[in-house]
Image (cartoon, rainbow, N blue to C red; front, side, top):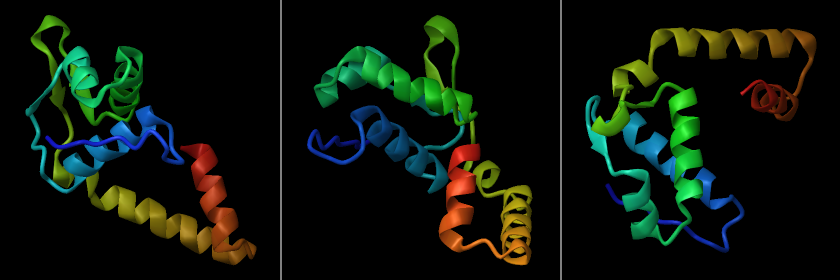
Length: 117
């Protein structure tokens, strides 16, 4: 698993880590059941504080992308098919339809979605 963090980047480091792991799962590069590095190990590799990586993992767990099984480690919970399901596509289509009917711009609809996230 190759992850990099840009300390001068616009996004905070925890968000960079979260987004990259999320992307690896969604692209199928991390399959369901894959064991992730420990928080301490990944923090050491990236030169980050342990709490930074822990926050990224916590947010991925909240999104049901990964799960921590106590001392057994942290594993990928979602699969590529899980993250690209028809229900999500249908919900997105419904949001677009409702926004257009209400005369809401793409930028406004994106902000509504971001707040709901």
